[in-house]
Image 1 (cartoon, rainbow, N blue to C red):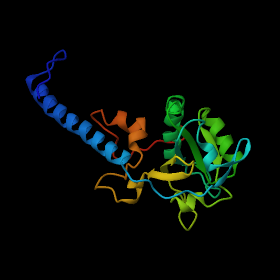
Image 2 (image 1 turned 135 degrees about the horizontal axis):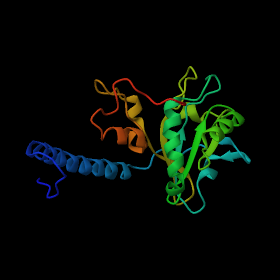
Image 3 (image 1 turned 180 degrees about the vertical axis):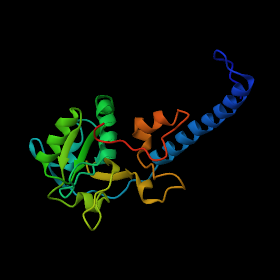
Amino acid sequence: MAQAKRFPGESTEYRTARDALLQEEVELRRQVERVAEQRRALPVGGAVDDYVFHGVDGEVRLADLFAPGQQTLILYNFMYGPEMDAACPMCTSFLDGLNGNARHITQQVGLAVVAKSPLPRILEYAEGRGWDGLTMVSSADNMFNRDYHGEDEHGDQESIIHVFAKDVDGEVRHRYSSELIFVPGDPGQDTRHIDAGWPLWNILDLTPTGRGSAWYPRREY
């Protein structure tokens, strides 16, 4: 595939290599869509218990986290347990980006974030980060995190994205979770289970130095 456009000063060597990369990018785009189509075509998962969370207006059931008139909910499991000294810096980076896009995402689906810490602790952290577009709830008094693999038997927290949907009768069903977190990464990689929704890594992947071999985001710089 030869690209008709050229950029100032580029060599024939650059253009040849860039056109070869362009073909790979086209194939990657096609593969991304094939995977997305397969994801959308998943059979309906299991029925979901009506978990009761703590929200800013008191108790809120999982079914109530769906936006009015919408049948789909994205729920992010935030690594911020009651035994943790501070919130996960990686989750913090991810949620910084998610908050910036929340007003757009919620035009199509419901969006919420759940963590195991008590609600006041979660809200204090969210306010400090400026997360004004995210619905934050606490699972301190239910088994949601454990049941949906955002927490192990030792109480250690894990990040994971869940998608739930309501069927025609209003019953909430599980549709998808980012299970790539449970599959070992290839050599030199982490699991990258939420990278598709994380601007940080997608932008750095465009650069000559990439992600950096040992760099990870921090809560503060």
